[in-house]
Amino acid sequence: MEKSELLQKLEILKSDDIFCDLYFYVDGAIKKATLDKPLQKELADFYKDAVLSIFNDNDFRIDNIDNFNDEDAKAIYYFNNKNVLDTIKVLFEIKEDLETFEFKDNKLEKIDGIIIRIGLNKDDSIVLYKKLSTLIHLLKQAKTMILIPSNKQLSKVKQDILKLDNKFHFLSIDTKVFVMNFNILERDFKYDEVILQKAQNTLELLETIEFLDDMKKIKELSTNKTFAKKLHNIHMSPVISIMENNPTKVETFINNHDELKEFFDITDGKLKLKKQTKKNVEKFIKLLNDDLIQSELTDIMYGVLNKEKLK
Image 1 (cartoon, rainbow, N blue to C red):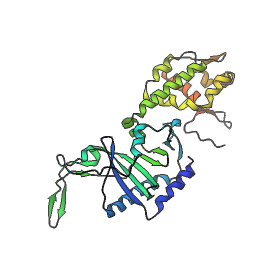
Image 2: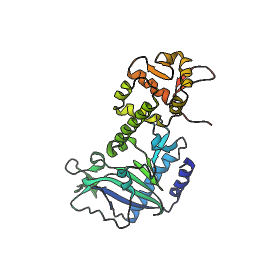
Image 3: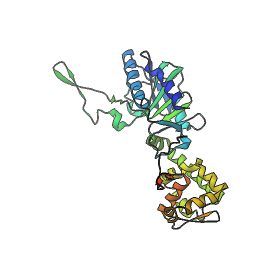
Image 4: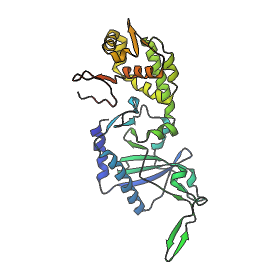
């Protein structure tokens, strides 16, 4: 999906006549919430404004989550129907014969998340998911005394209250699910395990091309989640192919720069870390990810993040 295509699809939210359905995710199932007409309108406006405020800022780009780079602050990543996690996919499988959520016995604390569908109609709409926290979104009578003015006196609210803000964690449109909060994805949907596995796949690839002389330190660091993200980032780097098919080019690149020779020795297509340290391994990861760029204007070498191709 291109950015322009996404923005075009979001144009439906600019209509004055959009509907809103609210659902609760409870014990692994979606249940429908009953709303009165005024509240439907208020919720529709509430969440459409939240969506448009994010995507009206043109200083972002979208990319498949397989290319995830946590150092790229401008990217919004999405799952497609081939790589979406089952635990996320189920959140957006909204059927028309869903059971209605019953508020009797005050079951608000059982709600894991809310699902909001807004648009022109059920076929031309977007769906949002928001993970709820009982500490943030539920005002319980046992811990809070909620008072409301009634004529000239205060009265106590006698039931728990569900409090919503306009933040959301996933957005689904067509067959794509956009991740708006990566911490929620990792913590509540176990995506950190996916990253660790992808890091192991990258290690296997590096072992196959037999470019790094000693894999011990990089294997040791690969079990760390932060480092695993960096390792995962390189799986599609064009540098991998160069190392495999034209190692002489990499050798020339390293030997032409004194700052790189502080970290690496390279001869006969084999690279050796001068020290088996985290710092040296991280420099190797930057090399793999093509993050070491020399300015043609100044001849200065930079460590570059958030690379954006200009041509």
